[in-house]
Length: 521
Image (spheres, rainbow, N blue to C red):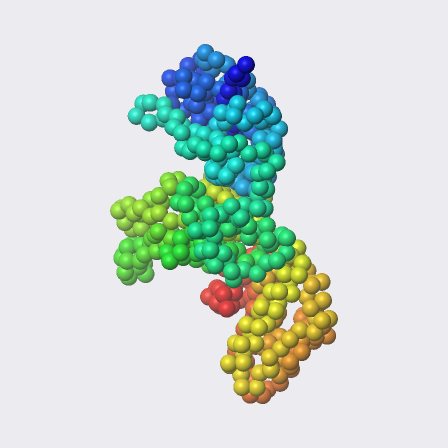
């Protein structure tokens, strides 16, 4: 007896689907364009006629129950079995969490019969970009699924097939975990991506997982598909700027990379810096100026410290990000400019708290948060501390050997390395780098850096101050360099409390330019 082929649709439930069910009657849904992707696909039953619909949801149970009931009342000749699988997502754009939940659903709900008795469909129009990327990956690498995209255009509802894999169904147990995704990057892309990430040091499990995810996201970006935005989250000093540059070099090599610390932009000049201005648009605008977005055309703009943008400027940025192509006007101009570029944003702020407190706009968070990457703090990276310390020591040895005639190349003693491993590193990699630079600056004639020497110099503020006041005045003495180190120490302390560059400058009674220069140096 020939067994009938089952048609199964699997989909995340998106906000567009839920909104449609709240304002449109299921009996008349076929007449409307805003019915949501899931309903639009189901109403194309002449072509598909599903036996089973599996909905993955991270919404509240009462919300998804109402939606499931709404779907059941759609005017369909054949009613599919509708199952809901509820999950909890910390963030709907967290790619590895989304992948984990989808693999679990496939493992639970796919029948155990021979794969040739199944026609599998993935809805790619509902949910976040991370969910889209998951369906794309699975259809290309593991499941012979049809990808369905739905939209309403010119008064007609459309459902189109995006991809059909010719392979036979692979058992779910053989699907690679997200940790192995970097191995699925095609060879023609892998060499370029590995080269771009080569300068990032990380052998610990936490950092390896972070880099695997970042490389796979860079690969997706290089395909020029949606989304185009990446959000980097992590404590100050974890290397978000370095990761942003690697993602850019992987996805758009040779194109402009424009980096800007948002906290360094004076509030009154924010729009001028971002969008540019025309001559005479305000006092001091003596000539036309190209904005950051225009300079990033075809490449990537990196907006660091995005959490420091005040709400008024958040609204302006959101307005520009509403479209896939960024459309804006220079200050003082009525001419619209259109720019296409990737946007990588980063912050050390707790955006969840800011969203709850209404200090960061949720729609802006949604637009920036195409993909999310969390960078682990240095204290969770084990022996990476030693690898990074050795890297910076070798770099500063070369630097100061060229600058100082009698400089002695340095090495760490074993007890010094143990001290570094046991330190909390609240300032992360930046703090470790500054410590090593300080040791090379303070002790040009010392060749072995010991635990005692490090503790004496950086163990507490009093000992460090005493040491700064007693640096030998010889041929290597440089008062400007020592003064910068002293200022940098206090800048780091104030910044660690969450202050912006402007606030730090006001507290320390120095100019913001000095703060910016010493943080970059």
